[in-house]
Length: 408
Image 1 (cartoon, one colour):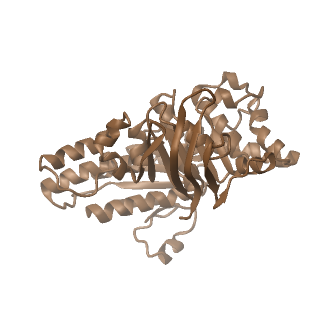
Image 2 (cartoon, helix red, strand yellow; image 1 turned 120 degrees about the horizontal axis):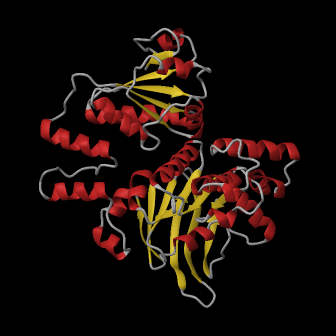
């Protein structure tokens, strides 16, 4: 991945205020998931606002695609179309009397035609799961819905980069999971995602790269494992080690676990413990994961499948999948961390169903395959596909059922 945004030795002091950034140098790669972690006052929000020109450094430089930012109005307008910013408090961002007008604000100011504005607004609201909310006053929305409306307002301009300041703040656990699932979906669709947060539990399994900040400086930039393994550095940043990593470090320190790649999820930890206790094992009967691409199945296919009573759990990844589940009055057991939770169910001999779409379909296959290669266990994926079984034969698949459900 090429470097998309870069800062070189930038410093910034607020008028009549403290020094907020001290010689900060970071690089952000295209298509990555970046988390800027640190306590309140560490400089996270200030750094984020440098990335699309809302703030201009007192010294140093900010580069986008290798070129230093120009702070003329026209140049900033184009930059902000490509680098969208979602504030921590959506009430700061949502100002129009209706959801439609608010989401339309960006496209209108970019000179879209009326039909282009309508299309952009409709697609953005559908993407975030707010179709049908066009005429609602924003002040009548819940906290999570306001976050989604603010995200839709940015998505309507089709940016390459999405920057989120504390995206899950003030949300309950379920609302936070919904937002993180939406970020994952946008990432799978090719967006570069940058967030700020002090929630290490959220960052550790999610991010590709973590930028740890403290007192306006970058303390460390690297993978989550590299950044969060240094307990001394975390204490300086006034953060704590993620629980999974802390448990793993304790097991290694006591000789109960060999040193190696730290677990990124509960599934990884369970596998490590089981492997060290029993060696590589094949379970008598692993369950299967049914996989439904909601963009490919026909109306009624899901209801027909659920009537067969084949699965014990259902998870949904992405707004389209959750919309379909709601439309079909299907109760969801998992809405975040869906793949690993369904693999765990399979390890216990239980079958489950994942609803998703787009690039997240291949993500399910990749994660299940990676787990199988690491653990030696085979979890079958039974795909929902409208093509005839002859195509499955061409792919070398076996055990294809008649109808739309194919074993891969």
